[in-house]
Amino acid sequence: MQIEAQRELLAPRGDVWSLLAEPRHLSDWWPGYTAIRADRRGLAEGARWDVVRGGASGLLRRPGGDGLIVVTAVETGLRFGWQDVQQAFVAEILLEPAAAGHTRATLTLQASWWRLVAEGLRPAPRQALARLHALCQTAAGL
Image (cartoon, rainbow, N blue to C red; front, top):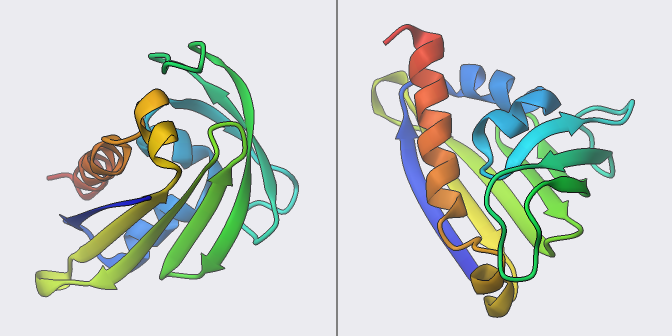
């Protein structure tokens, strides 16, 4: 099953990409991640990052704990994707130009329907884009 959310970010695509390209920032905008420890490759396809989870638990998941994500797609300035191994989902964010120098971000999440419900992942794309929007506003001084 696939869930998609879209939002206009109040920053140029290059600025948004700079935020996405730094692995440690993933925990700033993806719900449930509190810290990222990237491998030596950083943002590169096949890179394996350790993730520290926090926050609420799902039906099948305890709060907190460590996990692993694998970077599945990197197109500089355009697309970043990853697979969360423990939560069994694949996420991808696509950046496109929007009016007034802004950026349109589309975030898709693919997982089995029962994972979306059991892990509480259904609202994650919308929440992630809201947090990314707030970060872009803060960075722009708006």
